[in-house]
Length: 193
Image 1 (spheres, rainbow, N blue to C red):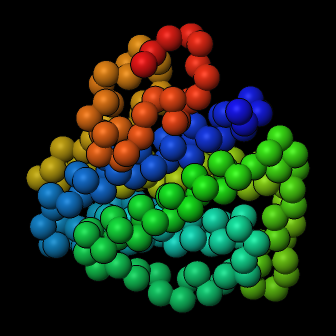
Image 2: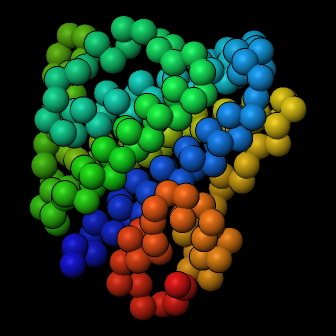
């Protein structure tokens, strides 16, 4: 069993994957015109926002894996032009993030991560890097959610977490993702299934 100190990070990594799955599944129903249409937000379109989430995920996950990708992550600010391609790439990086968290021991949260910047290497503790990345993801998914509300596709609910009693409400999506409740929140003796 993994240390309890890792449990919330594991749950956040899985919640990130689940929220991206919900959001990108909804976006897959958009026309290309709606995907790239200019909208009011930090980035000018749903496509730009979704690509930004992916790019930053790649930068941070690579660093947490010991890589040196750094600014090269920004080489193409919008590498994926279709939701199908973006979904595949986001799934891959989401699974890498889950693997990083799954590999952590209790002392892994103290490990120093080297983030390669334009002019220096930033050194931060793993727990701070993870929390920073989770916050970034939530922030920009919220913007994409708001932009989606101005399209022909209803935005999915993204403000849920893994409440034990609500397991039946996410059961179908967990099957799509190949998960069980125990995979996401192991050894939970407080209920749920």
